Structure formats: structure tokens, C-alpha cells
Length: 185
Image (cartoon, rainbow, N blue to C red; front, side, top):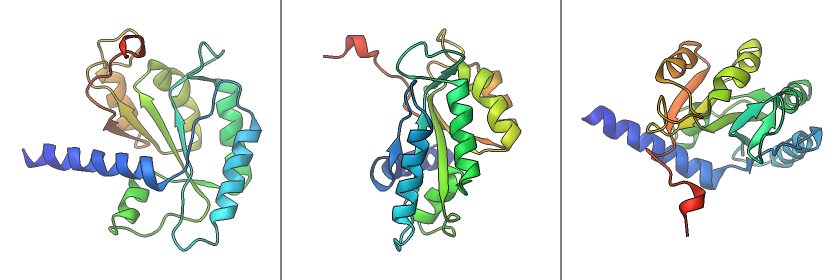
């Protein structure tokens, strides 16, 4: 029972940090190096700050074409990663930022950037995985456990286990389930 409380508390801390302590940038399907330059400008602006502020790039879906407003093309994602690397930024696991904020760890390296992906879309496995695996980039996933192995868009539990086995992916709960936007008032 305590293990589950600790996991829930950890997710709550991450959500709080995610919502209040960090800049969240959500690149859209038409994103270019301009968005990465915004990350650069923000990080440079914060370099004199006593407390590091880490840009968090939030993704949802990937694909060869932008199927909707939540999809980032594989080519754009790859160019964003390249820009970040070539301009002196380091990818940091979200966990290390959380530990620092909670005063349980050292500060992240200067010019750190965090990568997250929401919802557990299968394109994280098919499209994102090869790129982050190639470059050894840590990623935190926020999944809907109710969707995994059930929803047509979602990864399977086996695919999530394979992501975790790479040592690059941390898996957290987004929430158990989300009401589709079409049904919200």
C-alpha cells in the first residue's frame, strides 16, 4: 500500500512542478527551429537566475505527417533535437529536476531541457523511440493507464515495458482516464 501512496505523491509533485515551476513549450505540427530558438532565449535569460528554470518540451503524437494539431512530424522533432544538441543544451530526466526542487538532489546541469510525452500514443513507440534511443535522450511519459492495450491509439503494456527497459523512459500516470473533449461542456 505504501508503494502506491509514494507513486501517487511522486506524480503529484511532478504535476505541481510541471504546472508551476517550469516553462512548458508545446511544439505544434508546424514547429520549426524558431521554437527551439525560443527555448534557447529562455534558457539564456534564466542563466543568471539563482534557481534554474528548466524548459520542458511536451509532446503528444508523432508521425511522418501532421495528422492533427497534436502531432509533431518526425522531421520536425528530429530537427528540434538536433538544434537543442548543437546549441549546447543537455537533456535532463524530469526526475532529476523533481529531486532538485524537492531538495533531494543536485541542480540539473546548466542549459538543461526536459522531454515529456503525454497520453501513451503508440507513435511514441514507433516514431519517438528510434530518435531518443539513437541519441540516448531521457523521456518522461505521462500515460492514461485505462487506454494502454485498450484504446486504438495507445501503446500496449508490452511496448511500455520495452520503453522502460531501454533505461531512457520513466513512466508516470497522466490520470487514469480522460473524458474526450467532444463530451466536455
